[in-house]
Length: 68
Image (cartoon, rainbow, N blue to C red; front, side):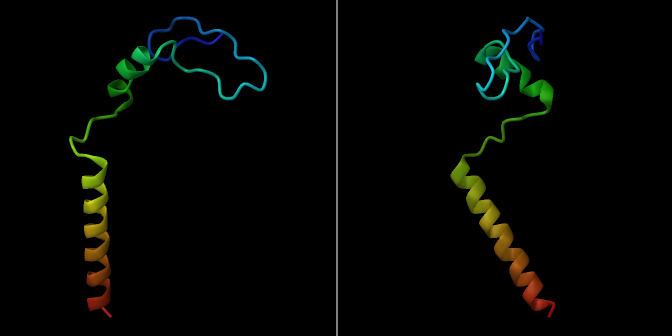
């Protein structure tokens, strides 16, 4: 049997054809493990990240055009 990636508690065996096997015993355990996996909260919203990505892409495109 597999153990929870967060706390090590035994996980129930997944039923055949039921999708991916669980990695964590509870959502709380999954959330506690997030920082240990290297995840950090960015402090920005999805809209802010999308805007920044568009600005960076536009900046790269204009730099690329100027070099030609």
